Amino acid sequence: MNKEKIAIIGAGIIGASIARVLSRYENIEIHLIEMETDVGWGVSKANTAILHAGYDDDPFLYPNRAKYCVRGNYLWRKWSKQLQIRTSWNGSLVLSFSKEDEEELYNLLERGERNGVKGLRIIEKREIQKLEENVSPNVTLALWAPTAGQISPFEAVAALVENAVENGVILHLETKVLDIVEDGTRITKLVTNNGEIEVDWVINAAGLYADYIAKLVGEEDFKITPRKGEYFLFNDRAKPKVSRILFPAPKPKSKGVVVTTTVDGNLMIGPNATDLPEDEKENRETTQEGLEEVWREASKLVKNLPSKSEVIKTFAGLRPEPTGGDFVIRPHNSLLGFINVAGIRSPGITSAPAIAYEVPKMLLHLGARLILKKNWNPIRRRIVKFSRSSNRRKRELIAMNPLYGNIVCQCEMVTEAEVVEAIRRGAKTVEGVKLRTRAGMGKCQGAFCRIKIAMILSRELKIKPWQVKVKGTGSEIGVGDLFSLLRK
Ligand SMILES: Cc1cc2nc3c(=O)[nH]c(=O)nc-3n(C[C@H](O)[C@H](O)[C@H](O)COP(=O)(O)OP(=O)(O)OC[C@H]3O[C@@H](n4cnc5c(N)ncnc54)[C@H](O)[C@@H]3O)c2cc1C
Image (cartoon, rainbow, N blue to C red; front, side, top):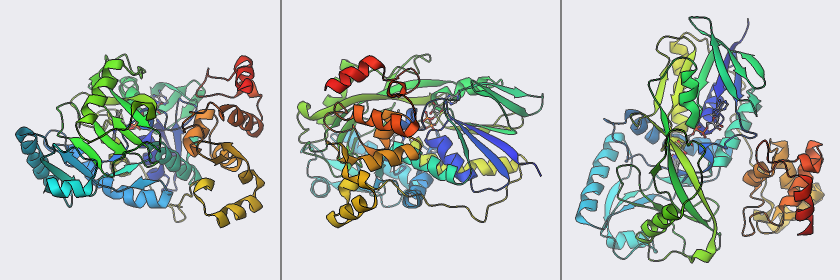
């Protein structure tokens, strides 16, 4: 019997999670389609990466956000173990500095309990200071949520896709969906810049562009507008850090500027929330005004921030804000074969596993035949981190593969063997290697290792050095750049 063909448009955290969940079924052919050169380069790359506990979202106003966040937080514990994705379950504190803030904490507590969040408590100053040494002395009360955590979002997408591909999913990179063809009653094929793909089902997980995709099949009842959030990232030695995720009482548009330590050990502050016009879906510029706001708001939460000279990077991410504010998770109302998983703004990273399990339910309801595989493999191993291995293990690794003896990135102590492994797992660009290994993420931000990584990419991908891309299409290193990099 012919396999039914399912296309997932978008390889962000949502598309990747759906691909993994669908890869458990044997009688379907799954195509994961991504317009960028790599997976996880959309909204899922630049965000706060908090696994929210689930007290923020009002179940009456935003039922999907409220429901999927709590369930997703729970599921990530299992998924992160199966896929060896780094997480830290260090809990969050929402801090109050006034009577109004305190009232808001009690609202959050009530809402969280209604949403099913476990372990929530309002705590007093002495306990707050025990949980977080660097907290501002002006704090009055806090909502303590022990189930909140932090994840590495790019690593999560890469791991999900690796696992999905291992289980048979077909990944199409640099493939942009341009049109969707239907025969009057159901979807028949996708038109892309790389030709046509015959499909029976389409899952729209296109992030900021999900409204454009929905419009291709006549759905115009929601729009996605970008809401910018800006950040400072400090180098991993900058102190003081925080051991919990610190939030202010939430604002109407967002959860407010957060002070947190990433899973890589870097202090990070942000994001603010600035609404952009609908057509500025690529505007990821940071602004002086925005960064000043972030610094000012973060300073209120802690005793001290590190000096600005310890900042290694400022960056911005764009939240895909849907009309109405709730996630749009539903099939097309008249055309068979099209399902929206759109408008996945925050807490989308947290909610992703729970949202993904909705898709097979909807497919079954719509008449798809899905049969579970007997030999589905839930396990994925992470790239061995040489610098974090014991001395004995380091000797063993070098004996096994001499490329472990060649350090490519001095700041992060990344070896040539790790770079080669990242390429084997799908990195095609300098950025892809950086995100998978951390080569170039240290203090020098790649100034010294970029050329070495480019040469390894050239060798492994069997392309000329000047054809190596730094990021996506059009970012080829170029002969001039090669000479200037070689002079460094
Ligand atoms: C500032 C900020 C802070 C956030 N903080 C948190 C947080 O702390 N915790 C949390 O849980 N969530 C957080 N989020 C939300 C979270 O990042 C998003 O909900 C999530 O990343 C959305 O994932 P996605 O897969 O829907 O979108 P994306 O990651 O954007 O994936 C969609 C993909 O579709 C591709 N695509 C688009 N159009 C096409 C096309 N025509 N053809 C082929 N491919 C296409 C894109 O290239 C992209 O890769 C935050 C977001 C932002 C911006």
